[in-house]
Each structure stands twice: as structure tokens, then as C-alpha cells.
Image (cartoon, rainbow, N blue to C red; front, side, top):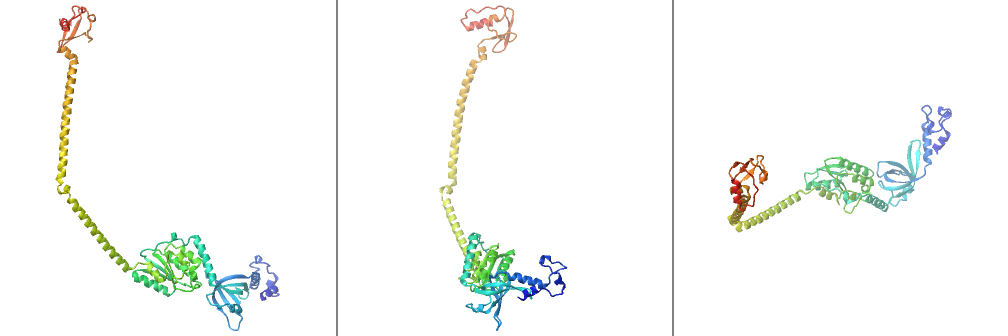
Length: 444
């Protein structure tokens, strides 16, 4: 009301601004600015027109001075570092079943107010209700259904843990029992394991932001092969940061395997479902991230013993098989097998030679018969019996007396050599009775 009255009254009479103040902010200039009192008054008028609103947050500070009816609260967002002051009548706090403590989650119905003298914004509460466990569980169940529908809980996206990580990233509270449990258990199992410990707030307003930042930083380290997020047990409200959507999506975005070790075995924050491996306790996480030296040595000794027995059995079996092979007749007297093959080769060679000789004799007989037939049909054979072939100077064979005339010279071809003869007379053959007589006449 004071701000409104001041706004209506305007600046003091006689001041330079009273004579020429711009009506709107867009009309202000460097030569004609608004005074601070006018700006704050206008902001207060604008804020006063805003309706009341229901706001959820976490109480991080409450001040209730004795003898006053107003309680001052600081309401902070549960996901980011942002807060607003709230004023509430003490009767609102007295109406709460268990009072109001720092860290409690509440829902406030409030109207915004702007204090012109301080230039600050605050909320004036008209109703205040605590967020009960049932409502928190309902919200967690709703978020669980949403993330499950997106596939953040699917087994196919889970990454396996390395057998022996180079560096184990550990996100835990400052000087917490969870840190000691993880380190002690892991180093008892594998003394050479290295840790990159990031101590953060694991409860309260800054838990979500700090844990998410630590997980992202460890995921960016190339030597960190596995990340453990560990916290001891607590109430549902204490473990709420590990069911926060911002933190869950940060863990789901990691390329490094993440182990969730939150609370005890009965606790089930949503981080257990998003992480690649769920450990029931921080101690269980220390057992899961590294192998046990003693167990590995015992397993190695057992494997060596089994391998030695298997090799011995295999050698004994091979020796027995070799002895059985050597006792066979074929190996006892190897020349026997070779002798049988040698006889088979000799017999085959003899049969082949005899068959070849027979074929050659048969072929020789056929050649001789053909040669005799050729000789019989040969003109030379006919000449050898005393016949002659008459030819003219041109080489034509004389077949009839009409082919020559008296006085022609002819060549008579004999079996051995030839003669040059003159035709004295040519007569037609009457009917020679004997070819030899005709031959003799031809010779004459």
C-alpha cells in the first residue's frame, strides 16, 4: 500500500522529473529516465496483479522469532540451486501434524510480493502442506513408468563390467561409511586397484546437481572403466535424489558402466534400474567391481591341475593307440605288404608284356598279308612276269594298234629297265589264246 500511495503521489513537487516523466518504459531515454522509486512502484503494481500459485519445494531454512506471528522460510528447488523467500503465519506451521523441519518437502499456496525498499521478490503463503510419503511414492511410480516406456530400464542397454578396471570412479558422501566400505572391500579383494573418489552431497538440495556433475566428470575420464555411486541407508526422503529424473538421465547417458549401491538391500531407488549393475550395499559394490586375488589364484591352480590331468589322459590314450597300431601285422612286418604289392606289379607287367607281344605278332601277320596283296596287285609284279608297257614319246600308254603307225618309235618299260623299239607293222589282234603268246609277239 505504501508503494501504491507513493506511486499515486508521484515525485516531490518542484523536482525536474515531476515536470517531464515518461508515461511508459518505452518512452524513457538517457535524458528522461525513471527514478528508482517509480520503477519499483510499477514492478510492485505488476506483481500485485499476479494470482496466487501452488509451489513445491524443499524447506532449507525456517526462522520463527519468539513473540512474532510471521515465520520466514526459504523454499528451494529440489533439482537446481534456486530458492525464494516465503513468509507464512505461524498458525500454518502449527497446523502441520509434525511441525516443519529443514529439508521437508512442502507445497505452498502463495501470492508473489515485491518489496520496493529492498527491491526483492518473495512469496506470502496462505496455505502450507507437507508432501507425504504416499504422494512421493506415487510420483516415483509415475516417473518409473515414463522411464520404462522410454527404454531406460531395458536389459539390452546394460553394459558389462570390466574384469579388472584400470581405475574405479567412486561418487559418495564426504567422509561417509559407504566410501570406507567400498574402498576396504575392493582393496581386500585386489590390493592394486586404483580409485578416483568424488565426494559430493548425497542428501539435500544440492545432491542431484553434485552427483550428476561427478558422474559426468568421471565418465569423461579415459582411464575410469567403471563408476560406483554409493550411499548408506536412509529414509525415503533422504534417498529421493537417487530417484530424480535429472540424475537418472545423466546416468543413462554415461558410456562407462555404472554400479548403483544406494542404501540397503530393501531400498529400491530408480537409480538401481537405470544403472548397469545394482549392488545391494556399498560393500557388495566393492565385491562386484574387482575380482578377488585369492579366488582367482585358487581358480588358476584348479585350472592348471585339470589341464595337467587332461593332458596326461590324452597322452596315455595316444600311447595306447600307438602301441595297438604297432602290434598290427602290417606294422610288425612292413615288408609283407610291400612284397604283395611287388608281386602284383610284376604279374601285371608280365601280363602286359605278353599281351603286347601277342598284339605285335598279330599285327605283323596282318602287315605281311597286306604286303603280299599289294605286291600281287602292283604293276611291277606284272612286269616281273614278262610283260612290257609301251609308251609314246609323249608318255601315253599304247593300248591298241590303232594308237601307232609303222615307223613310230616307242619306249617299252620292263621290270628292270626299258627298251626303245620301232613299229614295223601294226596288226589287229585276232583272238589270242594265251596271254603269254601275246606277250611273246609283243616282245618280238
